[in-house]
Image 1: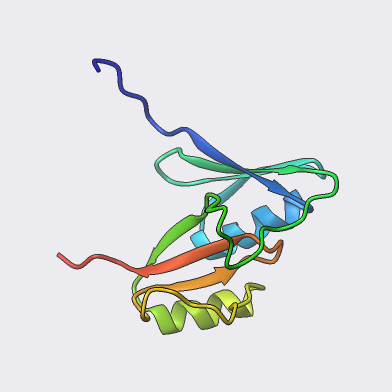
Image 2: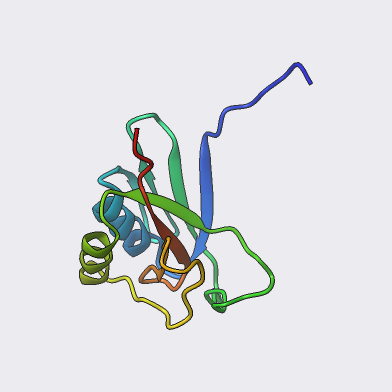
Length: 122
């Protein structure tokens, strides 16, 4: 293959795009670059964005879910501190936690699962 692509953005379905963007703005520190009732977006310093589009009848995926939907993995410096701060920002911690403590699964305020993982050292 001679052609490669760069990731421009990821779009997630949402019941409340503005609230979804506000949560990830707080968690990632990314700028809210668009916010309307039907669509919102946060953009990181590299230019990569996460968009949130309203989907009527949206229901968050089950967790655990054998369908293996997409989810975000976020690097953090300290799992315990990040978990406490993200829960204070509106995330929840489901009972089922795979990975033997090597990462933590959380659900954002809309119910979408995401993982926090230790930042690689070195």
